[in-house]
Image (cartoon, rainbow, N blue to C red; front, side, top):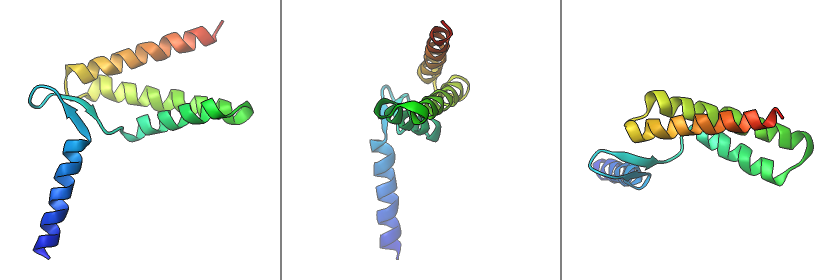
Length: 102
């Protein structure tokens, strides 16, 4: 049983290492997408592949998911680089949505 637990712990450590891209020690540049970003990516792909009502719903999912992701990164990011990504993502959304008003 302890061998199995050790193998599982080793697998978890490897997954954490593979799911993150670190720059300088402790400086995380990329990590596996969180649920709001997964939702945004899903909405983006579905929006590319569909038309009509499904397309509109998919775009709304993209905007909401991406806004939540950006907000979380801006205010809860693990370092200044991640917070900068959040600020850039929110700025992108503002520009994108402002362009839709015309």
